[in-house]
Image 1 (cartoon, rainbow, N blue to C red):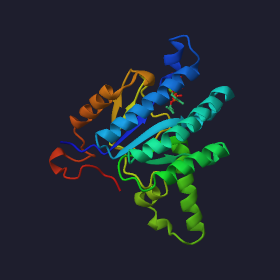
Image 2 (cartoon, protein in one colour):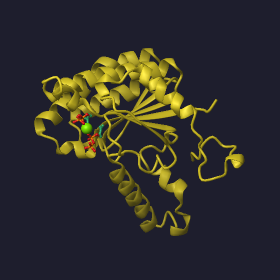
Image 3 (cartoon, protein in one colour):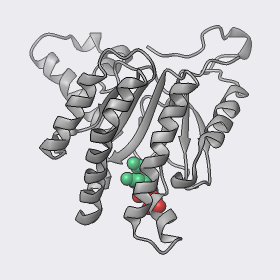
Length: 243
Ligand code: IPE
Ligand code: IPE
Ligand code: MG
């Protein structure tokens, strides 16, 4: 059976879910956080190795201040409540994104969760928070350019492996499968480099209605796909082109 190591999810549709119920958008975010918790547990139970969740984009900072501060509060509450549960389930917690833009107390909660689960060997869950792929790639280019101007790296040495190593995701393989909910068909600045050969699963379900059954359905759909990586079917021995 085709190997599925890494699922990444663009958890979209919280606001619309709430608005359809004549509730404030925050109501959808609360329900969405509960669904995220269930999906993390399920991913761990089925033995998935990597799960990446898009929780807050670089561009989400441009939302009304009241929504941004609610989302920060929710994130802080999640970290405080769930870190111990993650540890007990042997789940390793990590984050990608421009964390320096987050309030200090959230940065501390993130550090605590990372440290607490540092030695966990089960599922590795990564939250993309204040994350944008263009910003990530721009920063990687800046880091490499600095090394070139310091004489530590030659221009001729720059290759895909080096660029990949300078991304925030350097320690993780590329996603095999990307799921986006809420009937939108775009990446919204999510893992653009890393998704070069990922499979996509788009669902009309709004994130607060997403569940483990649909998650399994997406995984099964992945397993029926043919990944060619530009080659001919007969020539494929490797499962992916991860660095
Ligand atoms: C996804 O739901 C959660 C975040 C982006 C933080 P949205 O808040 O984007 O919900 P919709 O897309 O407006 O329904
Ligand atoms: C993408 O959803 C970001 C997250 C799910 C965290 P958005 O709702 O921000 O994306 P757009 O604005 O519809 O592209
Ligand atoms: Mg949205």
